[in-house]
Length: 87
Image (cartoon, rainbow, N blue to C red; front, side, top):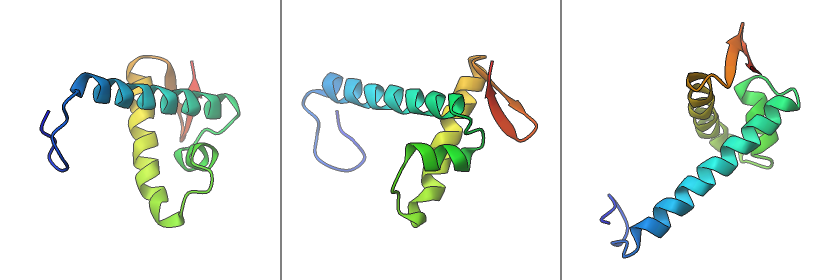
């Protein structure tokens, strides 16, 4: 596999599986945060990305939003006003 930056990847299946596993772990953390009452992206970021530098919180919030939209599209959560809740 030839990524846009960095060296060629000789074992793309392993790298892609690691990436998918990481995304699944993050999704699981977001669901845990929702169960704990964190219902806004900024609250989820603070729960999931503990100790994150303030200048990186915007990027983390974008990542959380992508997960929330995916979970919504799957029917697992919904937006209730300005808060995300589990179905």
